Length: 62
Image 1 (cartoon, rainbow, N blue to C red):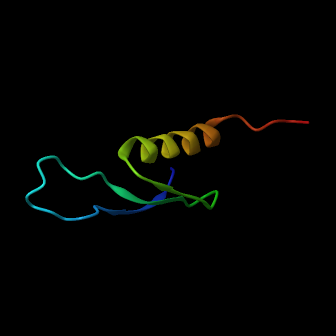
Image 2 (cartoon, rainbow, N blue to C red):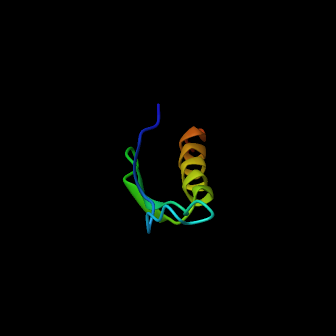
C-alpha cells in the first residue's frame, strides 16, 4: 500500500468565476519522504504515478 498526504487549496474562491479555478497544493509520499508542490491535477497525478512506479520496481542486486 502507498500512502500520500495531500494538501489542496483553490486560490481566489470567486463564485462569479466563469471557469473552475485550478487546484494548488503540496503532496508528500510518506514512505520515501519526497514532497513536491503542484499547480494542477496533472502534476499531482504525475508525482503519484512516479512514486508508485519507483516503488514497484524490483530491487537491484549487486
